[in-house]
Amino acid sequence: MSKEKQDDWKRTQIRIPVGLYEDVVQYAEKHNLSLNTAMLELMDLGLKSKEEGKSGRSIYFNDLNCVEDVRQVPLVKQQENLTAKISQLFSENPQYQLINIETLNNGEKIRYWYSIPRSESFRD
Image: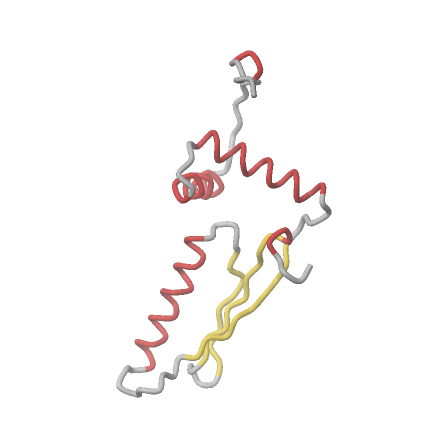
């Protein structure tokens, strides 16, 4: 395979919203990539998913029970622990978008709604 020369590349400058930029930086750090390589990879993934007809997003929800078998942990603490886990999930997966969090059954259950790229969906 021949090595590409700088003349084989196009140089461009783009303006990008701060939130999206931060998401790309996190993606680059998570995958041990340079910012430039991360942008190229994400653009390539986006274009491929669009070509495959899997553009858009799918919506899911998960229910988490706050009632452990051992009642020694207060309900509020259990809710805090689950909320931290949800926060970690979205921090580690910036392509996921949180839609809503609600409590059910007098706070004993937390339900969160989120969307993911259709290209990652197992049902589409």
